[in-house]
Image (cartoon, rainbow, N blue to C red; front, side, top):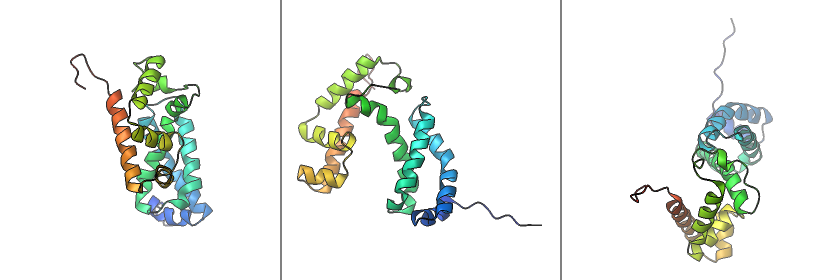
Length: 183
């Protein structure tokens, strides 16, 4: 009777995949796919683009896993990839491209496209210039934090702080309120 070995874990496969082992990479992608799908269903609110997000996320993991600094950061890194991919329809709209599936997102489904576009533009426009600049560089130009800091002429920490504050202000601006003014 042959003994079966337990399937390798992400933590076991990741170092080999990062170093270029094709078999480990294949196993890593196969093992990670259900989690990526689950994240996509949660973050994309089950839009019709879920399968596209999963596929694109797997491609990004395949291409960039070697650059991952810490093995322990893998799960958070994958979640962030999925979040960014789910945001792309909205980011594309802000860049002037057609809005594809934002209306399918349950979080925004109660708002007509023109209202969403208008509110988002107003939210970004309402930011003080130092926050707006950081937000646009990171989320629309897709610069790294280091590139942002260099272009802004500030430290890496200051660039991150501006970006964080800008995103928080946009979220605050867009947070739905009821008639009494509470969220």
